[in-house]
Length: 150
Image (cartoon, rainbow, N blue to C red; front, side):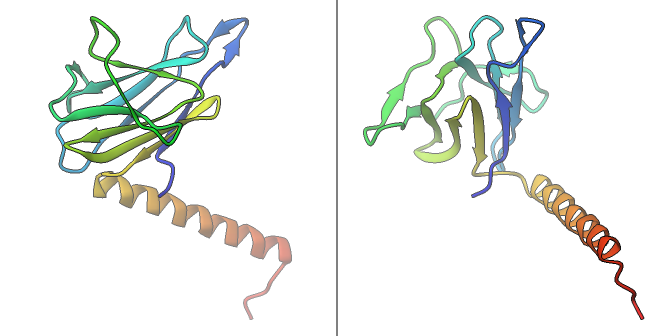
């Protein structure tokens, strides 16, 4: 399992907290998950749902948010009077859809995001970027070593 993304907590510019966010899509599901920092909170972020047009939507049917930091899972409820979950550093969370884990977020003063149902198109683009990076590194290494292709 590789990290699908990250966002920073506590990043400040000129004494002001800088907002950060991450959006993940899922293969075969008609919603996305967005996590974003809260401008007035340095150890919290909110996790909410978007439709395919990036519009905020109510929490989809079949969704459970579980705090999994300790061996005992704790099912979290949305923040009262909202349609989002409050994520607190340094706890670890999983989002389950119909009893299947599709998303995991772990806090390290940044949150690492795992997407278990990443669309094939996104996987292909990421693989292509990795391959291009390896090719550039190989070319640079060959130039640095002054290897002739004779």
